[in-house]
Image (cartoon, rainbow, N blue to C red; front, side):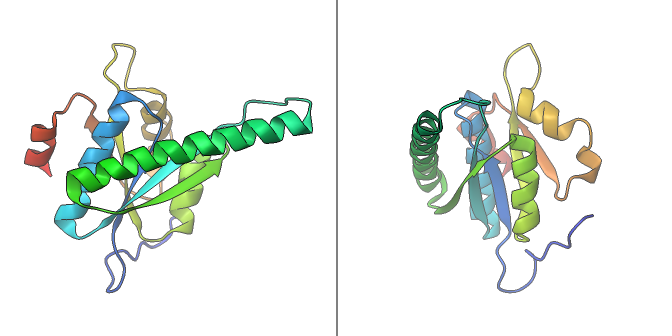
Length: 164
């Protein structure tokens, strides 16, 4: 079921969602989203998803691994948030979720009606656009709750500035 988006209503800021995963193209998606948000008076939400690694067997070890993953996620989000400030003088919302990436993206969009666009960058390798773009933009993208913008991962900052 598609929820009505209210980001266009007064008092609501249109948000661009960027999934942070430390791939080279991730920085391109962030730069594009930050510049679009800056030019449209919107905001940016950074999402880092910690994917489960399967059963570990020992609760104490699992708790330590989960805490280390959260610390890594927070450090990564902080790095990308600083980049958004540098690129577009923009503060971002930072969200950490645990689960399957595609499911957590959908859940976040469904829980925040101001998220209006998901921004992804296609990978630069000859093996395809990358697993996230393939998973989200492929099968089922027509039923996705918001538009998906896919930018080439090879865009330069000058090219991003020109198109945003």
